[in-house]
Image (cartoon, rainbow, N blue to C red):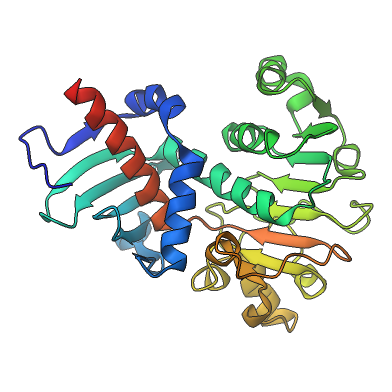
Length: 323
């Protein structure tokens, strides 16, 4: 990455990202990144939260350094208070470790969705039983649909159940889900979606638990992602004491994930009980779930994921520019 041609930095808008997405190897980029993190050739600092003055909003900074790829960068995600709906955006700056110059600024909205689903898929591939056959996805928005795309190919699923509260009356969204995989079954009740599930992917924006006692009929792998709500948690924090717990990165996730923070404060759970993170799973250093109790994978999203997928986008867009 030592090309300092006058065309750089590239400015890649959301429309350009959308056109490029089918050509990006999201899984490969994330695999290389997590292995680099396991081998100490990548650096993942904690997220930073910065409030705007006078309560007008805030922004989160996601940082990362990828030594092998010779790039570093940051995703900036602001939350801007307005008189109506808040403004939430995300842009990633990709920089060269060789020249110190900017390579690209890109809209990170769609990329964030893809890297989030891609990280979940890596976790499911390593944590779900080889004979897992029943997949349940809770949430049918863009994140839920991305999870469906990424998870569908991981096992020979006998059933793929999807639930969202308003899905029954949204014909367009039901059609979009069916177009992704022919085994999708839309459920009108959450309990029906979860019954006998081997893997449950929670893809909601809820700040409070969406699962409750007795909804799950057998030990399952549950995956959960982040939302902007403070201390957001899609499962009851008290459950963590009786689960095999995993996360995307043990150095940063327990201090940010809502149910982990609350479980540590209120339910005598310790971050030291995390059995493994994605770098450890990818490198074969983590113990697999026992299958005797629920397993839980928590992702908060890493700056390195943003840098890795931005670098994948940069390689593709720069290559197109050179054609």
